[in-house]
Image (cartoon, rainbow, N blue to C red):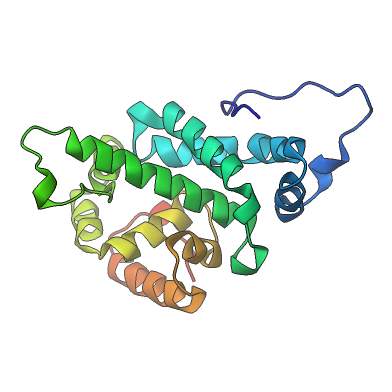
Length: 204
């Protein structure tokens, strides 16, 4: 299986419609553990969303990170457990790990980095902040987002930007759904007065 870019699509098959495209993501991942071709509809369904996730956080490396995320997801497909969350959240969790590794590598390449001072930064807020600045987001909103704890900020952006449900965002971050909803409510309360609709929305 070769990862595709968000614009690539498979042509029609020779044996009639592919019924796997009507299967749920969870069913496809379960089948992919024994039939690699069942993974292909997942790539078609989710490449655009995952690419957007990377573009908003590491725009210059988004294409490479998308390819790496699909390779890692394909390699790890046997380990998917539907009892721990939906497939979409699992894929974003893979993407989050790929992004964190990218940022750690980037940090190690900075002048003056020393191995005895840490393993590198894995919070991509700096790149996200640059994207917000480019979008002319109100300076006070940027300050408020910067002041949020990293977990609250990440949950907020997963829900607002990536359109994940609070439960899915919780699975991506690796915390209970109830905890995620509580943190989202707290973050929304802090931002509501000054944040634009597309960053607060209905996060409950």
